[in-house]
Image (cartoon, rainbow, N blue to C red; front, side, top):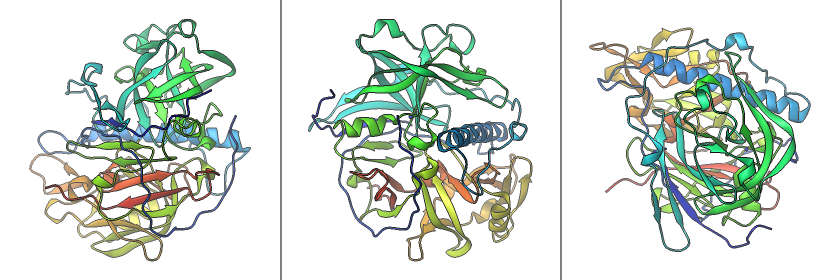
Length: 458
């Protein structure tokens, strides 16, 4: 049995058998829950050091987003016996093949992950920003005796996987590896885990359960996969795997995601976590609540529809200069996505209301605007929701080329198969504090995402 000791804990970043249900969602009144905290380090957008747009890096981000959510929808269809109206799985042909690889110029490595401690039973684990604004990564521990793995934490997926000891060649060569035979708490489960990518490479392996600890919080009998084949797209990825923080409906493993499992075993104070993502220092993921020291006032919560497996908030609006530009759409809040994406027709409508905007790359869905007129862009939810502004530095990905008067926007057009839902990533999240809340008794009841303005730095 898991320990019933309650932990509040923080992890510093430079930054998945289940019951499926279909529910609807409406905005909730504002309120302020309490909880514990997790810290994160800085992340940057696909912008070159000289201030120009890194086109190749952005195309690589697009491919990752398409592949991730294509697999999510395949999982959803399998778990639920079908897809909701308007949702469709993109064809593999829609996934760009072999985009130019962008060499990493930073010196990120496992050695940068640090460990510190706080009082009041808060264990703080250092996390690093890996792959230039693509993933928030930090150490977790699996097994008995425990072994550390550098993991990408992602609210846009629901499974946990690491690399198996039997995977030694190619992309697996430099990864930390899990050996089922060396853990006394490991148990083999039936079935297999498999993800297919656009280039037909895979991440796949058997399914196991074991003890998994993140920043001092332990989930017993956590379902995960130690993969025996690893897609070549992970060859230059410094992480050893992924830990998803989304809902069970998109779990390839058909399992409770780690956070839910840990919360139900009493390893965290509340079934809630909060994100403060920053281009500078001090970013934070808070497990077991939210950190009121990082935001002003209270969070404005809106109920989510978890039936499709995402942190999806309904009744969204996007504004330009305070004026409504597009309304009546859904938003999936995904910390594992760097940019923001909307259906092509809706994004075209939005940019028709931005002075001087034009199409920059039609195939990839990128738009440009005059660099000296960065639009004030904001999102709101519900008829009376607050407008949360996308900071200009997060909306502007840089000049189209050195000396150009045109800059590229971090909102792109892409048909991800998500119906009328927009995928809202770090470009928005870096301007707000975001809380992700499961229901305490019934995880779907009162589940919500909340936003608050950040406290001004002194």
